[in-house]
Length: 325
Image (cartoon, rainbow, N blue to C red; front, top):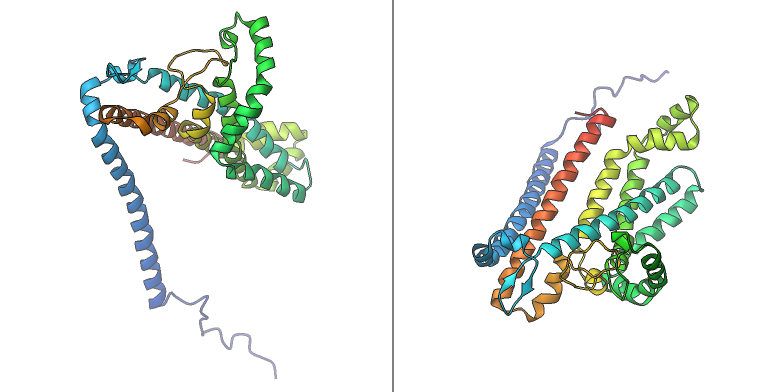
């Protein structure tokens, strides 16, 4: 006797059947938990801003915008200005982003575009990601005992031969912008590389096959097809790396020199907002604490502006290269 293939067609299984009451309940509970966590994050950020802003309010009222444009930090005379720190923060972060971003994207291309075997690529990716597990203070010590001695002969030669160029206008006597930016680039490298690798892996392999079918070489396919297609993910990686560089504290406090000056030279000492906060808080009095909180507000605003601008550029890139509204 032949079996009827439609004998059990009217009995819905647990997979194909409509959601049960317990499914609706679980979904509702999950939505409530997710929305609560999102709201909690927003409330936490607002609470942090409220606390920091409240402590910084007296300094804001006293110094106003001159705090941002001033170049002197003198507790004795109660003169507080963070323009050199803003310059050092942005300058060191941009230098680190140029170095770390370039090598991070290059590493991602090397690991995802069939230059090495997939298993070996996984090993290299793990090694790169392990750089993120190294403590900041270890990077600082490594920079003092390895990077600065390694850079000093090169810096001396560049200063003696190309000293007329502003970026080589001073000697590297010790801590300075160059070793700080180099170590900072290594610190943001895992972030840029990991997110860029994910951006390349999200591209369907048929896209590369189509490029090869049009007669492109490997590098033409990478530069003209893969990079534009993954551009939104690469920009996200660069924005996150830049934000990571803006907030780095301990390594820069040990390597940048903590000098309150504005200088284009890569070998001159400088300072950053995060380093100023870390080095000044332990011995700060009430008036200086208020000024330091004002500096923290400035750092938060810089980070916010960078992320908003980066998000805008990313959305523009998505619309231009990926055709998404």
